[in-house]
Structure formats: C-alpha cells, structure tokens
Length: 227
Image (tube, rainbow, N blue to C red; front, top):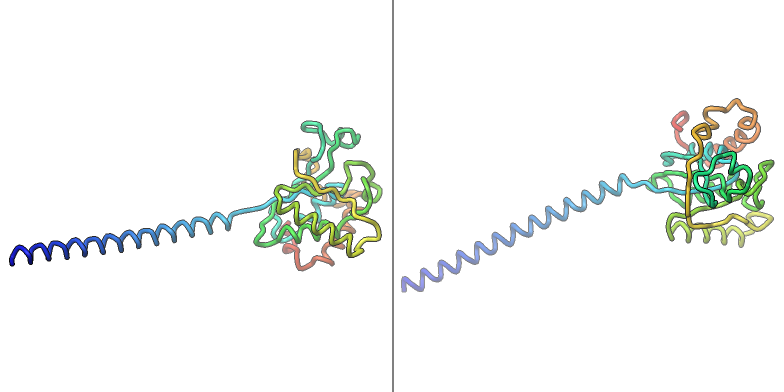
C-alpha cells in the first residue's frame, strides 16, 4: 500500500513539474513573440523608401519635392543612360542617354508613393517629348525609374488612368523604366534653388513652379523653413 502511494505521489510530482515547465515555455515563447514583434515594429518605424523621377531640369524638381512633408532628402543626379559616372557637361550634349533626375528619399508613413506620383504629374508637362518649356533635349525627358514591381504597377496604372480621363489634351509620353543606374550630380547642383534663389533662372522658371506647388498642395508641405 505504501509503495502504491509512493508511486502515485511520484507520478503527481512529475505531472506538476511538466505543467510548470510547459507554462514556463509558453510564457517564454510569448515574451519572445512580443520581443520579435517589437523589434519588427521598430524596424518598420525606421524604414524609408526611394523614388526616382525625371521632369525636366533637376533644379526645378529638387526645389518642389524638398518642400513636401515626409520627404527626407532630395538628390539631383543622372539616370537611364549608358555612360559611366557622367558629368553635367557630358549629359548636356545628349550623347550619354541620361536624364536629369531627382532621387527622393521619403517616409511612406508620412507621404505615399502614390502622392509623389500625383505631384510628379501635376508639376510638369508629361506630354512634351524631350522638353520642358525652354529646356530642350533628351536629358529633360519625363521619366519614372521604378525600384520594384509595386512602383512599376502604380506608375503604369496612374499613367493609364490619366490618359483615359483626358486630364491632358495630348497623350502622356512619360517613360516608365526599371532603374539600371544612377549617378549623383556634382555638388554645385545640390540644393540649388535654396542656395541660388536670386539667380535669373531660379526667379523666372523655378519660383513660379514652387508657388504653384505651395497653392495646390499646401496640405502636403513642410513647415516653413524646414526644407
């Protein structure tokens, strides 16, 4: 009888230890899951995205996108050509195949890629081939260089819908291509309008575009002086 009681107590002890151990593992797994979720959220909160647009002179494009809330950085550069590390002088000849572009680093939690596309198409003429106003040449062509399939699909969808809606009197000629290369422009091209606003080109070409942007997209702008 004593042996049976002893065996019973031993089995009960094992069951209790197993239960406690299982609870401990479950709690540890729960804590691990919570920790992993927290880490993923922290990573997502730090994630930035990139867009690459060509819409004529990159001084104009830079000046406008710099002013948008959620845009962290805008860098002028060259993309879409065959020459390696081209200079501004070389690009201006039209022989390198590059377009003047702006690389836009943005926070998708504050401003979406779709919004950037909307602003892109409404702040230049996407129906003129290799030209924006008096700036003529293949380097001034309207272009979107996408980084992934999502950007490609959104750009193509938007372009199709704009053409179908008759938003422009002529068909949109904006090219939509996968990014194959990108080279930053020379330092003196960076932050150009902000540093040279009194220059004649800035006064007569860029300033009116910036003023239009500030009227049409005033709810998308950064606080004054923060660009």
